[in-house]
Amino acid sequence: MLERSLKLHYDNKKIGVIGLGYVGLPLALLFMQSGHHVTGIDTDANKIKQLQKGKSHIPDISGAAITHALSEGSLTITTDYDVASTLDIIIICVPTPLSKAKEPDLRFIKQVSEVLAPRLQNHQLIILESSTYPGTTRDVIMPILEKSGLNIGKDFHLGYSPERIDPGNQSIEVKDIPKVISGITDDCLRHVSRFYRSIFTQVVPASSVEIAELSKLLENSYRFINISFINEMAMLCDKLNINVWEAIASAGTKPYGFTPFFPGPGIGGHCIPVDPLYLYWIGQKHGFHYQFLSLAEHTNNYLPAYITQQVKSRIEQKKNIKDANLLLCGIAYKKDSNDVRSSPALSLMRHFLQLGANVLYHDPYVPEVTIDAEKHQSIPLSKKQLENADIVILLTDHSTLPMQKIMDHASLIYDTRNQSERFQGSAEVIVLGGGNA
Image (cartoon, rainbow, N blue to C red):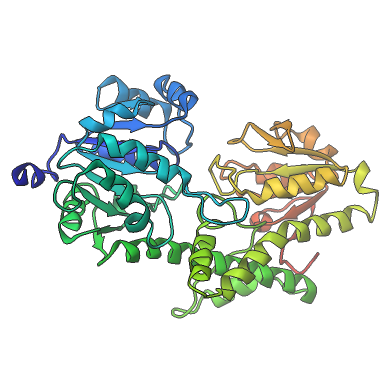
């Protein structure tokens, strides 16, 4: 058994990735490229069907890459969990959303653990990558897996390694992002380390799974608080008639002690708006009220209403909002992504529709969205559509957005990302935090 275990860092191991979303699919391809055979498991039968046809649901991954991996036999995808008993290493990348009460919803992690327990084999290594609160791996997953009758740290190994996938970011390869790792026991950590060292350029061991779990929440809470802070600063600058973007650029020249964050329509995605509330929840469980996180959430939730009011006020200088044509540019929560989870653009679209405005949107990555059970399709960004719009609202700074065309043919622009700064045109431009609202 020890001899087999020591070979975990060699090539040609059978790796399973459970959850083929924005984290799991890139990791599956990375493991495959590192010489392992990978089996991707996902309960979404439609997603599996599309992947088998070579259709990728993630902009960062081409359909050709999927087709190539499947054709050469280094990648297998399935909805069947029975294959788990044939794998050497299993990586869990399932969603960890919030409940309606804004509490951690671990049903997917629990379901996967319950499914794996009766299929668990000697020598297997199980690693959780889903973002979660400190204590999840030890207190939630471990007891379920131990129902198998196998002993952790002896018969099988369990660890936690927080995912650090950044969808849309082409400036760094996944393998070059330092990988934080941990294990339930020292021997578990040794096995986790050997595996990830065969994949990633740098591995950063944590002394406990709780520290590794907390590190992920700390990273995203840091961003959550600072983005909310700079958005509140933008709202103040609108009152003061001061350009917050220029102030940020000036402050950013300081070579120490300042990290620039930038305003926007709000915080979206699965991680930053969600993970801090996991931290807030675990704090409350221990009698601690995390005031910074509470204030940041309040600011983030208020921002779409603030932007709605800014737009409404400007429109109603000329006409009733119910008679206005609004064109939203960008629905995804971040640049060059098709991810609309918790996107503030959806909240803004809902606000405008509820006001009775005629709302259209353009997003090259998001062909369709559903707002309050009504489907809306992305429209081409034509000269006619731009000229017909009473206001164009820039929400997502996609690289492919034709800014010069927008500047030339729109009459009024509300820019939440300062995308218009480098362009000249006939449009009147209002910038969030630009001091010209």
